[in-house]
Amino acid sequence: MGREKASGARKAMPGMRSRPAHSWGRFSRYSSALLLFFILCAATAVGLFAIRDLRRADLDSQNMYTGSVLSLHRIAALQYQTQETRRSTLYALSTADSNLHVKYADQSREADHLVSEGITAYLANARTPNEMDIGRRLQRDWSTYLNVRDEVLASILEGSTKEAVDLDLTQGVQSFDRVRQDLAEIERVYDQQASQQLSNVDATSRRTIIRVGAVLGITLILALASVWAIQRSRMSNAIQLARLQMEFLASVSHELRTPLAVISSAADNIADGLVKEKDDVKKYGAAIQSQSRQMTELVDQILLFSATKDRENHAAFGILDLSEILRSVVHQASELVSAAGFHIELEIAPGLPSVKGDASALARCLQNMIVNAVKYSGKSRWVGVKAFPGGSQLPGRREIQIAVTDKGIGIAKPELPHIFEPFYRSPAVVAEQIHGTGLGLSVAKNIAEAMAGHLSVASELGAGSVFTLHLPIAVDAESQVPVEIRAEGSTEK
Image (cartoon, rainbow, N blue to C red):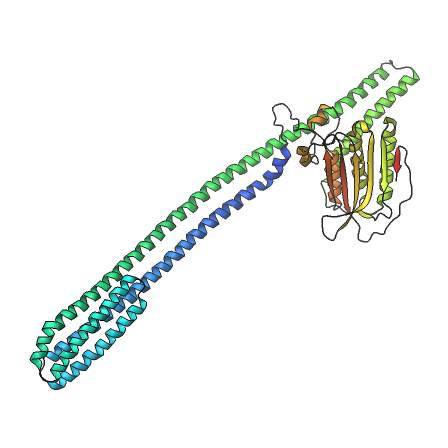
């Protein structure tokens, strides 16, 4: 079992980068989806701008058409009614029939009434100062003409046709010409407004074309970038996988080479008859036994790591007594390390609730944590194991926390995100020739997550580490009071 502790960056194989490959591997799984999401967002944003411009251009076109049509109707009606007013007056001047005089006078007054209403409507719809000025001038000129027209009609009805003709020629023609000029100027204003609106619509259309082109260009660029990034991600994943396999093979080969060499050498000496004394045979047998156990442990760790990747198999889960499992694991670990002077201190809170899980897997998880702490406890030769109910970060959840503490070399902050990654071993560990495959904590993490829990770590370089196993309390568990058990080489509080 290897522990992932370090004081610096990860030691790399020759020709390889020192940064761990696993963090990029995790990111690369989501990079393609992120790129496609960004492409969709960018295309959608620019597309929305284009749609907004299209709708604005359409609305401007509709407004321009409606305004132009209404303006044409308005100016055409004014021009027609002014001409009708003038025509009826001229008809009255050109006939000698008194009955027709009255008829044409009435027609002229009806037409000028419609013209007055049209001018009032124009002033009500005027939006610019120029339109207001023209409208007021038209209103004044039209009023002046009506005054002349009324005098002309009065003279006609009184039988003074000659005076009516003279008055119309001297004043009526001039005043009516001013009215026609005002109407012509209004028509020019309408033409200018229509031209401005058409220019605005044309500008909006050009802008929309540019934005649509930008959408296509951005989409194409981002699509190419996405394809490139995806291909690069796949190549990187393949390279990282190859590196991982090489590192794993190198680590396993290193771990197997030493025990195989010891076993082979001891077997050769025994087979060649070089070992004859009983004590020597016992010594060689112990060496073979120790190295065989080390190889078996390595194979078991690899197989267990593969097995713990399947987190959906809960068939063996049951209600577990943590106190009993903890004492058993600490007792076994104490037997192995007490000869080396290690002191394992166990503390179990009274009435510790049960958890739900697999007993053998949980024991392996705890064993990995304890052995990991022993391996890196340094000169302190002390490891603390404490189990107690604790608060959970998830609301409404109660959990049991099992903290394994050592006062060893500690872990540098840059290494903390990587210590649970499989096969990861830091430069400090490699430099101190501490054997392991980097699977111990990864196996423990997988087991914890399979039991709906998790592992956390707090560490300070040179001061030691605390690895905490968080397990949810079983819903149907009953409180249990632990029995006092004192293991050899350990102290339980």
